[in-house]
Image 1 (cartoon, one colour):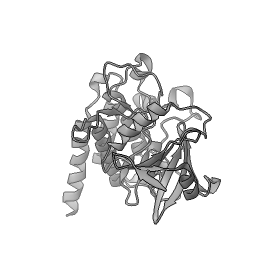
Image 2 (cartoon, one colour; image 1 turned 180 degrees about the horizontal axis):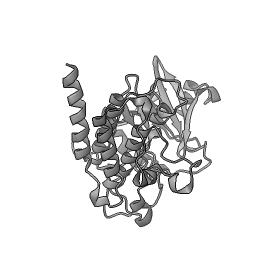
Image 3 (tube, rainbow, N blue to C red; image 1 turned 60 degrees about the vertical axis):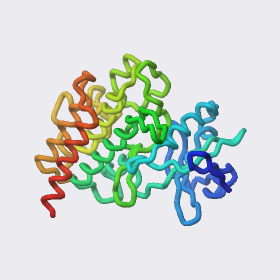
Image 4 (cartoon, rainbow, N blue to C red; image 1 turned 30 degrees about the vertical axis):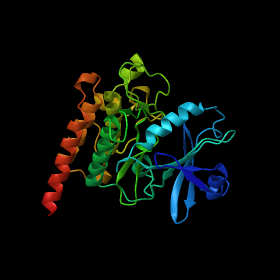
Length: 302
C-alpha cells in the first residue's frame, strides 16, 4: 500500500489512493484550485485530503521539480502548517500529495455569510491571525537541523488557511512555494488576484514582504468578512486592499469586535498592505502585537 521515504513521509501507489477515494469519485471531491483537485480519503480510521495535481489540469509537470518541492515541503513540521503525509508519483499517473484532513474547512468558507457554521467571533479571528503569522514566520526561517531552507509561500489567501477540529489555523497549499533566494527573480506562479503584492507584480521580485502583504489582505478579510476580490463591485473597489486604502470599511458585525481588537486588526492589515514594502512590518512584529492581545484576553478570563 505504501512505503516510506528517507524524510519519513509515505510513498503511496496511485491505485491505493484511488481505493481510498472511491476511484476519485465526485462524492469525495472536497475542493479545487489552480494547482489541482482535492479528494477526501480514508486511511484506516484517519481521514486524509488527497490533492491530484496533474491529470485534472491536463498539464505536464516536471517530475524533478515536483520531487524538489516535495522534499522541501516534507521538511516543514509546524503546528500551523498542514502536515504533508505522503505522495504518489508513478510514471504516466497523476502526481498526488496526501495531507492530513482539516475538518474545520477553509477560512474563506467560514467567513462567507452563507456559511452553515456559526460566525467566527472576534477572539477566534485574532487567534487565526496569530496562527497564520506563526506559520508564515516558520516557513521564512531556515531550520538547519531539518535542512529546511527559508521558503516563500507565494499564495497566501483565506482559501489556503484551513481550520482543524478545534478551529486552529494551518497554512496549506504551498503548490507554488519556492526556496527563498533574494538573488532570483520569480515569475512562475503569480498567486491569486486580490492577494498579489503590487510590488511583486510590477518588478517580478518576491520577498518576505510579499507574503506579508498577502497576509495583510487575509487580516482585512478577518476584520470585514468581505472577499479579497469581488467582481460585482465597481473596478476601483474590486480589490479589498485598494478599497481599504480609500475608505474605512466597517468591521464584520457578526464577529462582535470591541474597539481594541478592531483597531489591532485594522492597523496591522493596513501596515502589511502598505504600498512601500519598507513600511510593512516584519512577521515578528505582527506576532508580538497579535499575541499581546491574545495574552491580554487569556489573563482577563483567568
